Image: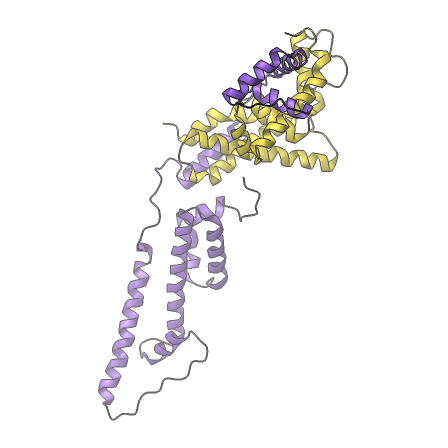
Length: 226
Length: 170
């Protein structure tokens, strides 16, 4: 090995320090030992360094037992978020929680479709085409369709769709919580609470164990985490 | 049956406390830092796979950050930890009735405490926790080369400060 002795005092300090820690490669270590054998000044420096390190290790510190308050808190956390449990599988592929709402939405859409179809059949082909009112705002297709259904008002339809949407967003939130995507979860949570605060899904948010855990124990990201 | 979380407290609390005490020089702050680290671990540690090593490293990172934060606040407020003077000796010769070894420990403690925080943490993690350079780098968030140079400078500083107290010490 083509080892060159350090040139500066700082480099020597680093070299000897790493030598004592066993952090030098074997060949470099042998080269340093060989150099020190023929250099009393460095040998003295090394001996003083060893003595200093030995003295450092004499500073022992008695540690107290963990305080009862810590055990109590841990007990709370274990009860709250289930530390004792085995890790749960990550988010299910199909949003089972949404099933009731999805079925409701499906029944609703079938009703609308049947209503429109029935109207067309009763009026017959001579009847002028039904012209749907122009959309007041983009994205209100559902509203227009709902207005053609005799069994549900426009407001009810909107409420229902808001519920379905809020439930879907809530499932997304739960999925993010389970994946420990705290930043994403906070973004979804804020959107849900801001835009769908009047829905049942948001009103019953705290009934979900994952969401309770998330709100209680995961602060909004502030960038001071390790 | 004890949970993994409780076992982690049993295994690591004392080490975290000692590390924080050596960093801050205050038993009260050391206790606060060690507790806070476990509280955060309990709160944020759902990622934990149960491996002891990963928990230990995470806990040390948090404790280290808490200590550094405390030291910065102290520096801003131009104060020292409340019980520092009560636990660490004032400059000057130690009490004559103090044993030689005890006196040396006091000098060592004071010399380590007087190091800049960046040097202090690498010395503590190396000398007392026996961590490798790579492990220290992962905890302090700096490069291995930086750990190496800080450690060397810290030791040289300590060698200079403790030289007269270590005369005749084998």
